[in-house]
Image (cartoon, rainbow, N blue to C red):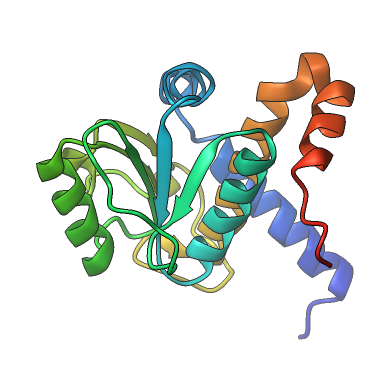
Length: 189
């Protein structure tokens, strides 16, 4: 029997909420602290694959609106990474080949590696200096498109996690922050 659209919406919301609730508050606190203090004056590079990369790009844009120096790996204006920089990666599976390769390369250079990973115990975790992991094993299996810890539920949760980080960073000054962010918003539209 076909699910109604309202039921589909509720399923997406419920599954995303459940996965977000598996986050470790200490990992999230460490991430927010690094993001709002240590990394605020450093260059931050972003890399992922697929839909996760699109979500990271949106997060990078928000940080740019806030005055952060951000770079998208693979873009023509992306400079070389160095030891004072941060590489932020996202992977539902934690084993995507190019993400592992770039994280290892950046680590050898001395950059800080931060990851948002869709499940624990992945090859990506030991490479990273800072990790936020989702724990899908703690909740019922997703009924959305998924494979190997990644997939639709991870992507939805990744987007809401990152948007929540922005809100958390600006909440006490959100009206002023929005005005400041709009000064950096694209005007060639």
